[in-house]
Every structure is written in C-alpha cells, then in structure tokens.
Image 1 (cartoon, rainbow, N blue to C red):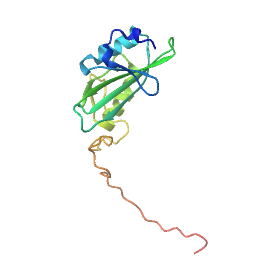
Image 2 (cartoon, helix red, strand yellow):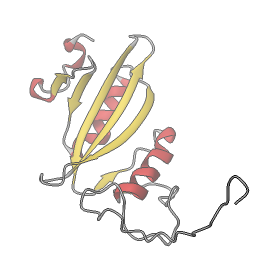
Image 3 (tube, rainbow, N blue to C red):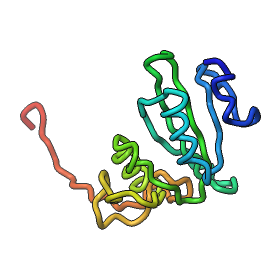
Image 4 (cartoon, rainbow, N blue to C red):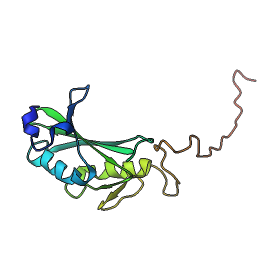
Length: 155
C-alpha cells in the first residue's frame, strides 16, 4: 500500500511488519476515529480480526490488534493501540467485532465500553479470572481426575 494513502496518520505511527502488512499505531483516544478513517477514507472496509497481546511489564499492558482488508487494493492494514484494560467498543459501527470483543473480555478481562452485551462466551459464567492474562497463575483451575482400570488382553 502506498504510504501517501496514509497521510492522515503521522509518519512515526506507520510501519511495515515482517509479514508485509502495513501497521498503524494510534492512541486509545484516537481509536474510533482511526477505524472510521481506515474503513471509510482508505477503503479497508472489511473487518477481519481483533486480538490482544498481554505485555505484562509495560505501561498500558494490553495491545489491541485490529486487522482490516481492502478488496479494491487487495491489501491488508493492521491497526494497533494500547490499553490498561478498557477500550471503546467498535461493535456499534462494526457489528462483526461483537464476538471478538466478548472473547477478549472473557479471556483477557478487557472491558469494551459501549458494547451492547459484553459477557463471557467461552468460559462458564461462574469462572473467576481471565486465563490469557500473563499474571494468571497456571493450573489455577482444579481438575478432578477419575481413575478407571481398564483390562486389556483378557486379564
């Protein structure tokens, strides 16, 4: 993608990752405006993915990574922002983000303000904690093993 198409973003926020996808980093306060610009002005109208990375030792430890595709340009655009655990929901204007935001709420504990129904979708409602947080203790869920004896070969 031509960098001049991204002139609305400052040059220090634009990079190209090892996989060749143009990546734009924005502040959390500019996220909604940036997504609107990416989809409307730049033509990356297809929302593809949303994920998070927990960088435990950093300020604003969660990095949200949004992936968009442009059919006209036949190219991808990645949008990143950092948060301490809260972000605005994009579901009201990108309905396909609904389940992705619920998944990140469930597994990372990220609260998406303005989401129409933010709830656990993978773990049981009574589950305590968020298993993909790096500070979550490993093996914190007790497992009951049932020992059964199977006899093979007629014994």
